[in-house]
Amino acid sequence: MRFQLKAITHDGRVESVDYQAADEVSAVQQLEGQGYTVLSVKAKLELFGMWRGARTRFPVALFSQELLVLLDAGLPLVEAIETLAEKEKREDLKAVLERIAGFLRQGRPFSAALEQFSHAFAPLYVATVRAAERTSDLGPALSRYVAYEQQLEAIRKRVMNASIYPLLLVGVGGLVSLFLLFFVVPRFARVYEERSADLPIFSKALLAWGQAVEGHGLLVFAALLGLAVGAAYGLRLPRVRAAAGNALWRLPGIGERLRVYQLARFYRTTGMLLRGGIPLVSALRMGEELLHPVLRVRLAAASRAISEGHPVSRSMDGNGLATPVALRMLSVGEQSGNMGEMMERIAAFHDEEISRWVDWFTRLFEPLLMAAIGLVIGAIVILMYMPIFELAGSLQ
Image (cartoon, rainbow, N blue to C red; front, side):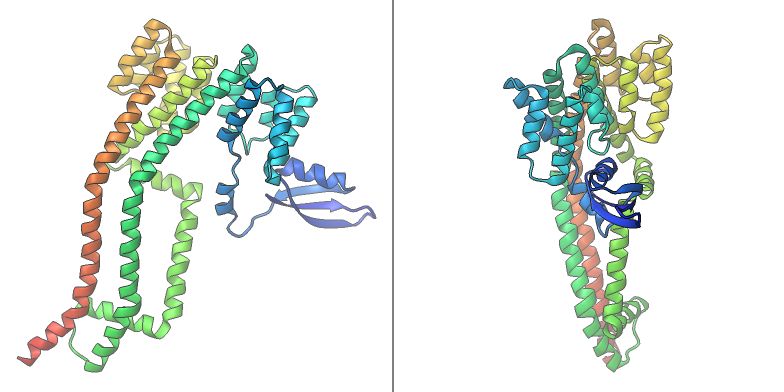
């Protein structure tokens, strides 16, 4: 990540320095190590930086797996992290691991060291490690987190695999439509302009488009490309994504499935935290980031009710955070005292339900999408040939 720093040089001059580092603290420390006095620092916005940011995320699951293997092999925690830092080839990730090892050599807890890198380690991960430090079972805690990430990744892969074919259909249909609109229609427009036929209104609109492409092709293409880039950029903005999410939640059928999907993730996360030794109310609060804002409000009310001594099952159901199946299983968990495992079973049940719904929706959506694409392409072709039919009719 690049930072813009304002610093005082060795001879007292103020300079603006462009610097690459893992985070702001690293940038300041490394520059001060070169003899500068840093006055201010801010992250530098780069072209396409938002797209690169998704690829440079810290691989927490892989880090946990490798750390678990080294700990099981008998290495102390500090040496295990130093070993991971030595084999890391990417400088930004290597810097994070080296600084974590430095914090540990100073005698600070592992969770406190991870907390310094909020851009790399989520609060959920830090809380899991902190709970493990109380009981000295870091290995089992890392195993639970790795299993948790693998289960979430399996669900994401199912959804992604189900969306590949529809996206392929949209891509191919879009390319065919663009070919017709940018190559075929302009040539038809030239022919019909010479004939000066009396065209239907939709054909006139289509041929007006062809004339615009013929006369200002680069400008039209640049405008469409700008709209596409703007739409892609807008979808990455939190405000736009939140508005799109709210629109999906209001759709009948889909909104309910999104609620079940989020509740499944929430129950899985809470169950993992409970099995790690974190109190129930604290675990509920840590998992609230996984929920839609409407569900967060309901979770706050449920947490208050649980804090006041009300049963978990009744509190969650009363605030719309439990399906009928989840309500029964929560009641069983209260009676058996094994709430963490029961919440994970609730999540597993709903994950299977979501998977079945995704399969059913994909089978229904794919033929509908093919029909829609066929109608769009067919409509363009018919509007292009309609003037020919008009001319043929006028000659009779």
